[in-house]
Length: 624
Image 1: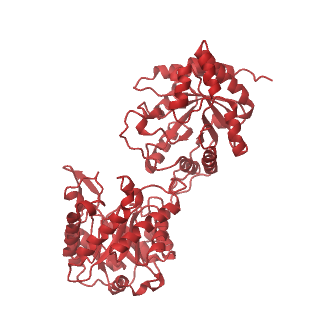
Image 2 (image 1 turned 30 degrees about the vertical axis):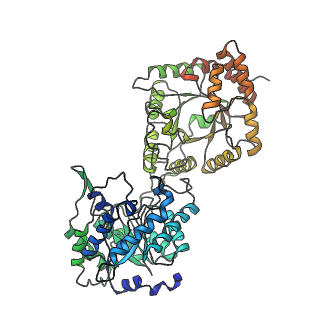
């Protein structure tokens, strides 16, 4: 059936007759019946079909006319977290078939909605997932759900409108069943990334979505506020609402939701009066809640003749004042970049609470003439003091500017932004954006890497902070004044790919580049031939070798390092490996001094003597 002919679809015809009652939570009941959160709920369609079927039957018995499949996370990205990405079609098809079987037991018509949730990862430009990959994932899942028996598809619990629109495109390219699309909203009446209900309605109606609405995140009152705004904006689509049973609390080892069936039933009638045609529940709602709604909606609910929307809702929440559009004073580092030869030295925070050794080292480096100290963030994924604390200590105790290594490895999108505000408040204004070493390398190999945001996305996010807004477009008050650096591996096996990655970081707004260590100027030559030169001031990484064994280890065992054969031979023949390593490093600095913005010195094994000598050499007048 072409989408243009969907008006005659039985599901939409049923909505034209009045309110249709949907079911409630699936995950809440699965958890309540003994399945732990670390299991894949969607896979239960295969391993425990009787459990899933019984939940559907309970909702049918409670009066639901629309039951959702147990496939909320059955896309290739979410299933991939359980090594099940190859079973998308199997799990989705089984989920639809189970719901279809349960619906067939009723003595009335019960529709099956194929549930599809977010992929759980940010899209480009913040994340690494492309729009094409998103569309493909939803197309794959949608086809299996319809083949398994879904009458309608429901995209729900989305926080990013752009992801939802790509999901809609994927579904519409593959199927011709009616589509419900629902966003989640905060207590402020906006999505997490700042979109208002009227914007959601406008965008989804332009896409031809048949039913639009809201679910999850807030309780009945918050959902009613949002649906009132949607009702004032909608022109063609039907409306849906599936609130949570309030906010959860962790009590006695279980998550408990406190909205009673009677409370939610009262709001169901208010939603119906606003004009909502699909009413159900999300997290925390049970068959008891749905039965109470069924009873409350048994009597026809008159549509309010004059839908009066409070002014504060009609135009969304009062806008926050825009931040003053005045630029922050550039950091001392930013003022030096491209004007003087910058000398930076990396230090690792201590593995405990005492930092005297590190602070003493920074004092010696300052006396030698270093411009700035780079503070690493748990290098090699080994536990150390927070780099924020180390930066703050260096700046207050040594009066030396720092660059904070800020990794995407350990933080989700919310924590990234929160941490940025914190470090700026501490006076740390230079950051080097890095992905971070994977946990598998370090002390806690079973720890989970987050990596919600790719480095170029984080650069873009920081630059939005510098304009006075968070990633959602909300004002943060005074704009930040970060100077942002990015990493470059001149020894990457695929330099063309490395160049493309760097171009994305530059396009996002990076201010300077720090390279991985190199040992010969030819490494810089090769990359510049590809890029046509370096697009920003670059600090060339220099890690002085201490022995032949050290050179062989870096070259053969650590990713990102390439020590040329001639350098390894030179270290092998050296009578004093430490002095030979300093000599190689100094020759490199002299060879590239006129071509780069400075050097980024990395002490070998945390020893400062070698780099102290290199700092002094770097401060000598350039040879002519």
